[in-house]
Length: 177
Image (tube, rainbow, N blue to C red):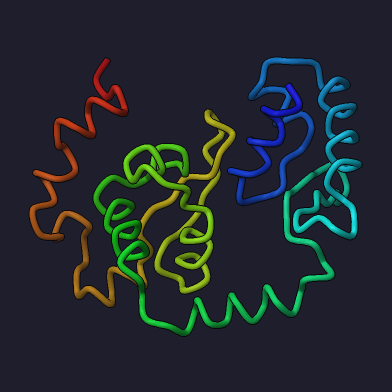
């Protein structure tokens, strides 16, 4: 269970309560809290690049606060540079298949998308909302991105109908089952 909680914290882009994690794993909240405490002890060390922070009743995985300047420099470069091929691909998948969760996005792309999602959020190209059923955020293209593309409706994207209903997408998401 500890590994599963660690994975959930890794994929979640917002702080999660022990209740949310317990619900997702279908286990007791008290057990989750014990396991979270163990994860905090595992990660929150000076030589770890990853920390788990707790604010009130919520937990979130983040970078070590001692690495703040390094991370800020990296993020600044990431945000001011042109979009990379991977970022454009991720934005396209979100535009055509959104709203979409990070695990679904990663299933389509076949790679971890955490940093790319963060970058697209910072740039205002995608929006994040919480999906209560999945206990995960869902991503969709932002109005700002649509404005940059000169469209007023997502269905105005080239070949939208073909790509948004592609048989591969239907198969991996089990839509219609």
